[in-house]
Length: 616
Image 1 (tube, rainbow, N blue to C red):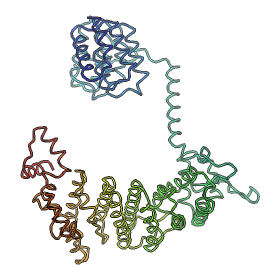
Image 2 (image 1 turned 60 degrees about the vertical axis):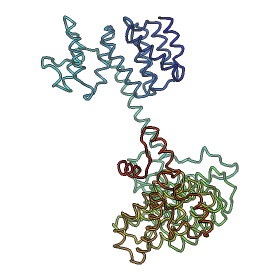
Image 3 (image 1 turned 90 degrees about the vertical axis):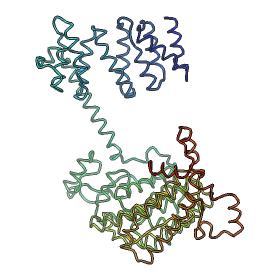
Image 4 (image 1 turned 30 degrees about the vertical axis):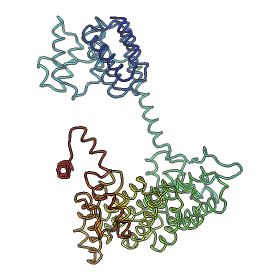
C-alpha cells in the first residue's frame, strides 16, 4: 500500500482523468486509514513546492491525515509555510490550512496550547458556532482538570455568543493562560507596524509631491526639458518678503496644502505646476493674472514642441507633457481655453502622432462655440477618421461620446446653479440644443462611412451602438430639445449581424426610444416629434416583421428602398424571408443549438415567444 501511495504522488501532477483517479484513491486511503509520515512529507512537498491551482491544493491539504500522530517536522513545516506565504496564498487555501491546524487540536495535544492561542486571536463573532462549543466541551470533559487554554476559548466564545456557552464558564485572565509577548518584542513590532503604515501613506501620496517628473524620461541631449523645472525669482531684499510665505517645496502632505494654501508662493514659470496634483490644485485656484500667464506659456510650449520645433523633443517626453495637460483638465473638470487654438493649428497638419492623447484633451472642450466646434475641431477630426485604423475610429467615436457627456453634465450643473468655472472665469455654455446636432450629424456620416469601409465590423458596430445607447440615456434625463436616432446603417447592420448580443442591444434601444417618447412629446415641437416617431416605427416594424412574421423588410422600409427590383427579386430567391426569422437567424442558431442539446426543444416560433416571455 505504501508503494502504491508513493506512485500515486508521482502522478498527482497528471492532467485530466489520471489526476482525478489518483486524488480519489488518496482521499479514500487518508480518510479510512490515515497516511504514514513519509507519505505525508512527500504530499506536503507537492503542496508547497508545486505550482497548483487553489482547488487542487485545497483537495490535497484535506488528505493530510496522519495514521496515528503528526510528527513535529510536519507541524513545523506547514506552520512555517502558512505564515511565510500568508500574503500570497489564495483565500480558500489559507482558510483550509487554518481549519487543518484547528482540527489537529484533537490529534496532537502537544501543540494544543499554541493552536488555541491562534484560534483566540483569529476568531471573530461570526465564526462561533454551536458545533465548535460542543467540541470544546467534550474535549474539556476528557481531563480531570480542564486545561486553561480550553477554558479561555470557551470564555471568548461566551463573550461573543453567550447563548451557546454554559453559564458556569467563567472569565479568564489571558495572561494566566498564555505568556505575554515580551515587552521588548512587543514594542519593536509596534514600531515596525507604525513604520509600515507611514511608508504606505508616503507611497500613496508621493506622486502628488514629485516635481522632477521628466527625470527618467528619454530626453534628447543638449536640449532643455519640455516641462520647465520649478523656480523662483526674487528682486530686492529678502527683508520685504512675506514672512508667512511658503515655497511649494515646503508642502509635504495634503493637510499642509490645505493649511498653507493661501500662503504658497507660486513659481515664476506657471507651466512647471503641471508636474503633479499639487500643481493642478494651485493652478485651479490661483488668481486670474496667474492663470492667464499659465495659458500663454502653455500655448507657447505646445506650439514650439509640436509645430515649430517638432522633432526636437522625444516622443516620450511630448506624450508625457500632453498627459499632464489632460490630467489638469480632468482635475478641474473643464477644458483649457487656449488648447482650442492649438488644436486647430496642430490638427491642420494631420500628422496622426499623439492622437490618443489629443482625443483625451478633446473631451474637455466644453467652452466652445458652435462655429469653433464645426470649423476648428470637427473638420480635422473628420479628416483623421477617414485615414485612421479600425481601433482609432473606435477611439474617435468614444472621445466624441465623452465630449457630449461632458456637455450634458455641464448643462445640468448650470441649470441647478452648481457650476462655477475655476479657470479664467469661463462663461456659461451655449445652447446645447444647437451644439449636439452639430456633433451627431458629423459623427453619423463618419459612422456610416466607417461601417462601409470595414464591412460592418462587429467591433466598430458595437462602438457605434454604445454611442447611441449613451446619448439615449443622456437625452432621456435632460430637458434639452434633442432626440438623436441611429442611421439605418446602424439599425439594419445590427439586425443582420452574427452577434446575438448586438441584435439584442438594438432591439433594446428601440424599446428605450418607446419608453422615453412621452417625455419628449411634451417638450419637442410636434412636427419634429412626429418625424422621429415615424422613423422609429419603420425600424421597429421592419425588425418585428422579419423576426416573427417571415417578412424581412416592408416595402416602406429603409434597407431595401434604394435597391433595384432585380436585386430585391434575387434576395427573395435566397429565401430571405425565413433565413432572418427568430428560428433561423444565424445570430441565434448557436444558442438555439446549445439549448437543444440540453433538452430544451425549440421547434416553433410560438415556443420562442414563450421562452422569450419567460426568460427575458
